[in-house]
Image 1 (spheres, one colour):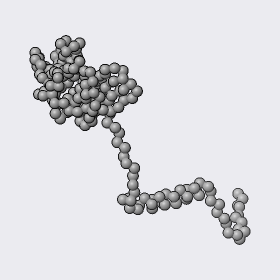
Image 2 (image 1 turned 60 degrees about the vertical axis):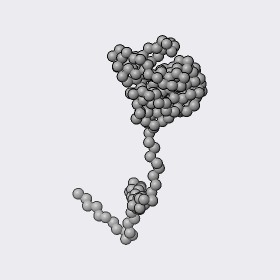
Image 3 (image 1 turned 90 degrees about the horizontal axis):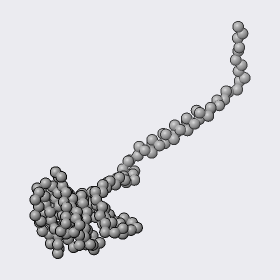
Image 4 (image 1 turned 30 degrees about the vertical axis):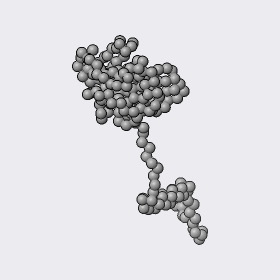
Length: 196
């Protein structure tokens, strides 16, 4: 076996850094600089505001008098009006979850669940929706109107009528909850509800 001897020329050996080692060293220096910057007082750091996702709206009913006058009612006090080209928010907002919307002429009324169960929201002539105290003793679930009269139905078989600006209780032969009302005229009405 042949022995190979190393030759020393008397000059100092040069180290050629390979490219991966050089990149590793640069990355390490950048990391140290970033850590040093992050270790400063965090109270001076500002973060962008957190964008909360919007609360989803569940629409429960739609009512319209024409293709240019349509209303959609839903949760979170949402009522939208369509004027033939765009939807506009006209509802009161808040915690009312509307169950039904109806109307007569230029009057629109919406009923639903809220802190006060016997209150409806009404708009006359395209104005803003405002609280309308109906005098009901329980929750209201259905709304319908014709001509100048409005009808509401609700808990315990309640049927209410608004004529000439005043609410009155109509005679009901049931005690089940009524959840919908519709008719052909002020004298031909049908109410639906629990137990058929």
